[in-house]
Amino acid sequence: MEADWEVEVGGGAPVIDAAWAGLVDLRLDPGLAHELTEAAQFPALGRALATLNSSGSPVSTSKCDVWTLVDPADWSPDELNAPVKCAAHAVGCYIDLLPASGGQWNVPETASESCKRLCARLHSVPLRCCRADLVIRQANRGHVELELGITAYLTGCGATADEAAQVLGTALHAFADAVLAACVPAAASSKLQ
Image (cartoon, rainbow, N blue to C red; front, side, top):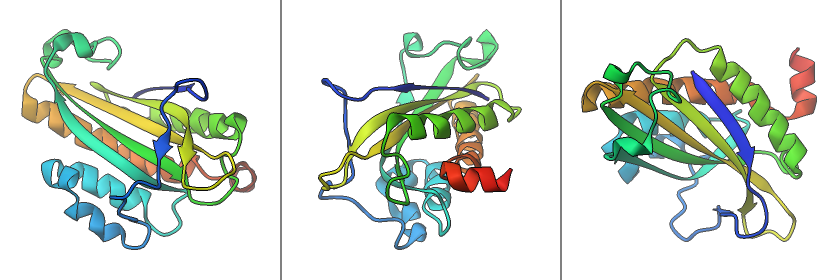
């Protein structure tokens, strides 16, 4: 699976808003993920959100969305490791990830280490026609101290719209499993190795 990451902090960069009025705290009940509008549109997203917000997960989520990419200029078969004939249709989604424990991503270096580990895990997953792009951003949970989060953009493509949706669903499953393993705080990660 293709994966990459970058940092967009400061200036006019977007901020993850985890204090928005419509937030459904899935950490309290991950099963609620299946009731979200986005999960009704795309059930694989609901399954991924339930996994990402499960007890023991190193992250929680704050916002997500899913959409059909209609303009072929919006994706590149090369970036998705896809043969051209398998890139006629594409589906995308995003999930905002926040650290489950305080101080986990309080500086770009710690969030970057999580992204590097996550990308390494995703690269080892034998999936084509998809990718994950991780963007480290400042997060607002209503606190004064700086906190960072990660916006994960996932894209899947296929020869048909159904095939593209199936690929994205498989990529979301792989992504959620990789997050559970890769985004643990550095101190806990070194104990696991």
